[in-house]
Image (cartoon, rainbow, N blue to C red; front, side, top):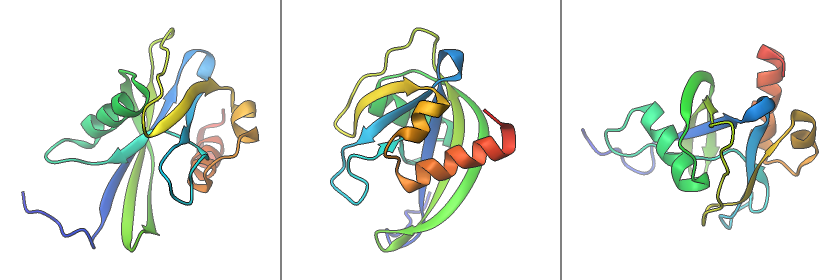
Length: 140
């Protein structure tokens, strides 16, 4: 595989993790950037030769300590960030019914919320966009 220069697209991967009763897992972003403290879904960048699904599983494991099952692709987005274009693939993911998420150095206070509770949080704009898209396409 050829290395892609940093100025080109980065592939981001996001897991919209559902727990029991359809609750959604969100945590507070701890990276010191414009989204610091906002509530987000776990996710990060694709590494090496991993598949998209492997990347989502790895990122969710690293960021919230959960072993998840990957579901359908929700959407793909393309947006400028930090001087380059990012492509993000957002997947449904499923946690075991009694799974307990754990904080990491990237995501703080991860917990499951109802849809109503989620919309009351201080969400990162991209997180709200994903929630809106899910409701538009599938309902809650």
